[in-house]
Length: 403
Image 1 (cartoon, rainbow, N blue to C red):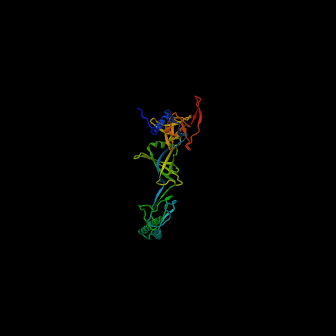
Image 2: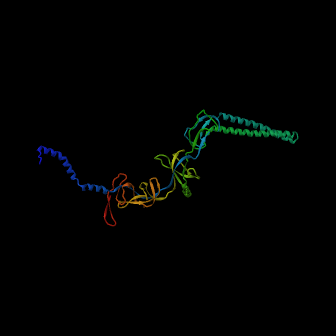
Image 3: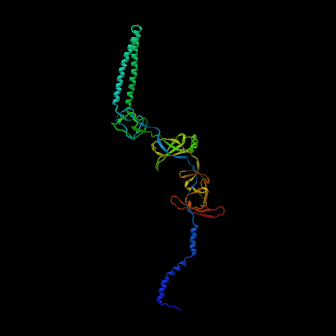
């Protein structure tokens, strides 16, 4: 039995089925081959973008690096050698002073009085000594004429000799009084930079006080840097030091600081058993006083300056078989090349085997590089891709477009 629909019902049924029909038409219009074509394009891929650098033959210093502490070559703690009242602070704290320059002054009046008293005592003893010597001369002639006994002459002579000894003692006391008067003027025993002054005018200064010194003076130019290196470098240090003086560079903390240059002056005669390190010392002229006592600096002792093959250390890659680099060949394809690294200095690696001067190695973008496939060498400044160049194959005679 056939059901017939009215025109209005057929219209409603057509409107209801229209979205389903459109969906079927859309699915049928998508070609499977087209989808496979897109997948094939993604799998095919292109040249890997990379940054490169040349293998260079250059001088790379063979150096030992360490952390050192800056120490003054000469340093003194200024103390008073007499007890008295501080009369005047002649210098300011932190001032550069010359050797022998007046630093502090103690009230000299008591010491001047002691000096004058010693001078008076010496003059008195000298008068008595002259009188005694005259008596000795007179009694000697009387004794020769047997007018005075020998006992009397010996008594006069002993008194004169006692006065001579007393004169010597007074002269010594006078010299001590002069020295103590000089000690009232405290002077710099060496040239350098003064530190904090702990006393002020009117304070009592005590002789040879074991407390804080009046001030300290450090010699800043030249200056020493003390540092330690592991004991396994002892043989290399002795060998290279025997060939000539070793240069040392000290870099103060700070991103823009330049190194100060000096020379190795001291190699300790024993290894510290607790740390297994060898103590060394280097001297620096330090004309600009950039090295400061107590400061920690980075030290580099240059043992030699050999000419070696060097590449940026960023080109090195590591695998289970060892270290390797990607070499960009003339046809712009990558080659995996095992290398032997002697040492790394800063951002450079010294290569002993695996590379030749003038070859090109990949420094960035190694993750996308596949050995034997093409690479796209980029400009590190602007990232622009270089224009393609044509190269001829030696065997097939074909032209290959270099990316």
